[in-house]
Image (tube, rainbow, N blue to C red; front, top):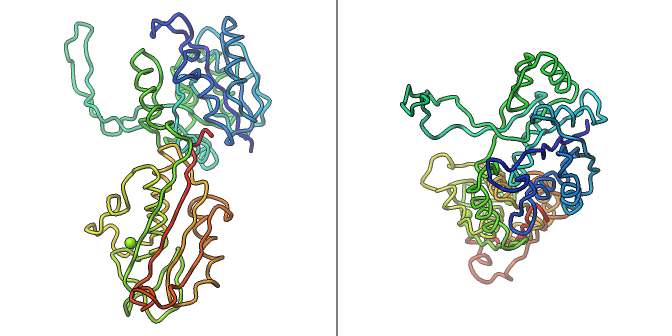
Length: 389
Ligand code: MG
């Protein structure tokens, strides 16, 4: 099942009062289009960019500058977004069950988690459209600016792109809409018109569409906040007391021992140090802030679940773990034999390769609280990498 993108880049600068297509405007030193193309790096097998003929040279330059390794082709845009996307679909050589993501090039800040969510939903349900639950109060307003009525916003979502579908169904829906003269502002509507079920996935407030001048300012703010450096380093340190009648859980696995670690959660000191390192790398506070020990939600919880959530947070912020190095400091029991299993479960939870995770153990030659077996300590260092690197 291959994954392709139809990138709709044929818009005009009308609403922006710009002298050119808004996706060719420069945002923090790079065109909006180049940034949008690169969002899909490592996630897809090919892309067709639909553009207006007058933009040909600029679009091709932007595509080159994006520096992606998947093949990029081009198709001529039509009179409307819908016609342009249809042209893009017709130019794709894909099979029925391949996934096609239709993306508005004006959304150049889409978090990777949003794109992955859409692809996963396509694999599972055959469609995925990111949405964010409406938070503002909604009103119908008459042309004379009089409020007609309030709209119940429960169940209302603001819809974003990329919108993902199976190629066979999507192109059929476009054919039929074209034949019937049905006009919509997004691809989900075209599918719904043809009676297809469309599923919502988790969108993001970061996934803004650059439509008006103010949006460029907001996008610049988001980028300068996240692009100060492509790498971030964090450290974590944690200690838990050893006690009787508790399980000893270290780096996600239970280790047979006469004593266990005391704590509100499963007291997995190794994962706590790792999570603090990951949060610290992005100045997101520590696990005490995200998972307070005053909350019953986290009582006895497996720290692997918390690690999954921390991983989601850093990915939503635009970073992924490059590597982590954890040191467990304990006089007893012998930890060495359990390390391969720890590495396996931690890397699986983080969705990374085992070689990105290092776990070591040391004693303190019977010195200090660890040496007296009063507690176990852990240190962690991690490197996070910005996703567009
Ligand atoms: Mg702790």
